[in-house]
Length: 594
Image (cartoon, rainbow, N blue to C red; front, side, top):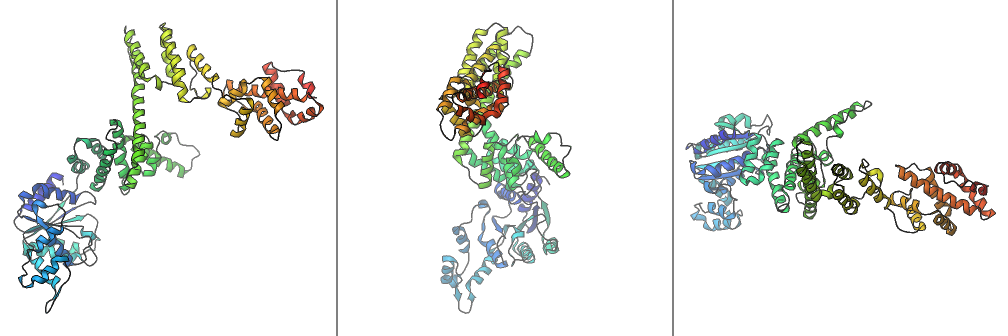
């Protein structure tokens, strides 16, 4: 039944002057109580009765408890939904006519203690009877039927409902969760005799979302749309989403709209995965580790086991679900949103800091998009629009040069060189390699995806790498390599290779201690290293040859040194191979070694 028809049916029920009992039933969490309350608040003026009582059976263990609760929770229909206060309870109690027992009533009104009166017994029992006698002409909602106490049977509740309808001219609506009762429960034996009809509440996803988000304005449009895309129709989940969104509103109030949009994409997904009772097609751990669908869509390994293939298939399905929803990958910002949903509170400082980082990325993407737009204009036609195309490139350069990679710069340079505008572009390239590229932290030529074709860009890039050295003496550099417990690499490697043979000779000549052999072997091992590019190979070769030549010179000084050199003779073959290839061999040095 559509939500409009349910609303009409409930209004008709409440407008009837004769006593009526109905069941409002539907799946757990679909918002039956929430919807009924909204009907009462919106349409109470059309109700045939002026009094209203809402009772939850949760925790009630006796028929007396239920009767008392109905009386104490009775309010004017215009006040339906307001919190019952001590004053409203006392207002109901003051309706009791106990003129012969005023002192007992005073005691009751003080804190409701069980006063004993001679020949009468429990004064509270008398009051309960009078309370129930005063209950009439009231619209009563009984909720949480399946959570009533063990001392309150279905027979008791249905019997009371029947009495309220037939003897008190009340109208009673019982809210019931489908599938919540055992099929042998007495409810099914007596319900047909008590209730006139059932109203099934089964709202669509769109209707459920509208119930929660329609009243909070256009600012929740994205949340509403995302909840619909996830097919969340559980009112409790939707209200959780709204609750957490309210927390985020304050933290992200000054953030970029795309930051807020990302938060409102992650939030419903996190709530659904954590609190959805397994209805969400992805678990929260999968979401936290999700870095895109590429891995899930790679071809299957031919040697994979059935179990591995099943894991891959499940991951592929989850990836498709996230992609279709619009969740591309989980970053730190998403993880903090998920943490908020799990814990119920947010680390505001962390969230704000991540939001600022995300804003920088958004600006980066927007600025670098200018370069893409310039290339689109370049390739769009054969029109005579040189000035327009160059203006587009120069806008991208002035706005987003800090986001260019080397290949971006190389491609734009090629256009300017072809047009004979090298002078302008050279100044841009100079600025790039003095201000932009060093901040990117690139230390190795191997990190460049494609070496630039433009000669000037290539020259400046090569000059940049040659300038990457560590200042300090050879002794300080070797110490740094030893402390790093590996082969010299990057700036250390380049710095060592640029030292002269004389500096290597002086280093070994002045080295005196237990680290002599360790340091010498570490430098000589460079002759066995295969570099990741031509420049690295050249550096390793130079370090080895300069080290070995220095040791050869020292070995020729005394007979004892000749003997000492024997522990390094296993590098002699490497030395001759590299020396022959480089043309730097000192052919006579090997004689001294003998």
